[in-house]
Image 1 (cartoon, rainbow, N blue to C red):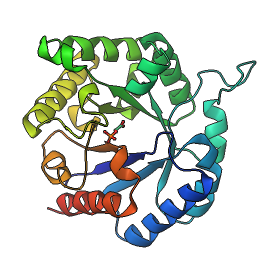
Image 2 (image 1 turned 90 degrees about the vertical axis):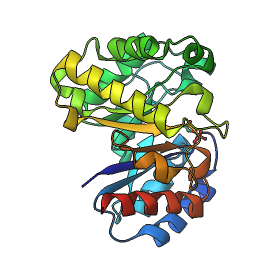
Image 3 (image 1 turned 135 degrees about the horizontal axis):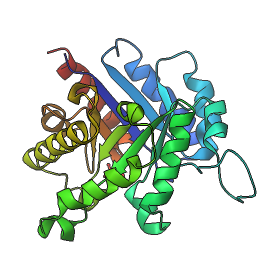
Image 4 (image 1 turned 45 degrees about the vertical axis):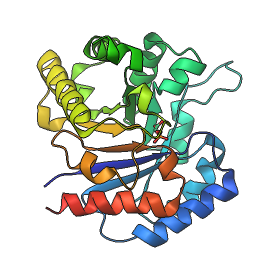
Length: 256
Ligand code: PGA
């Protein structure tokens, strides 16, 4: 029986009022029977408190889209993992390609964040992925190797199985063009093989989710793949009906 993590990355969309309405609709839609499918919402920082309040009696999980690596300090505009934990966040996304590109986050910063999150017992969702050009030049595995190795460099290797990997090909994010099932399966299989052989982790203990234009139309094919353990969903998670349909699809596959 397959288990899924279906995560909504709301990016810089929805104010606190809109976030609450979105999550209320979601709860009304998917309230029951989510055993094999963990549903996670990652609203903007300003909505975390409001959403935490709405989901407190449900099995929905709360996540943040980013964090700083320090606990506290003179870092104007930053938020620490401890602050997020205090609000009820179980997950924190790190290394999203939009942060790597627009905010110049490098593998070293991402590694520090990863280690701070793990120290707290929270679950990091580490995003990795290649650009279109890199894929065209057959560099996908080289790029993913570097991103994974750097991120894992300084952590206790026994904690690796706690990390959720989100494979998000950069060319698929927000473009409406997802990876084909063949591309997704091949890369997910490679990621699991690489991590399990390099760090001696049981392959079955690894969670690798797919992100990049997943929607209610293509999710069945993608989630049905042997090595796809869920989705990190941007645009399609902002519509309660579409996100619900993805969650229901995951639930139905997990029962097979
Ligand atoms: P998308 O975004 O589903 O809108 O492509 C995914 C992501 O950026 O995590």
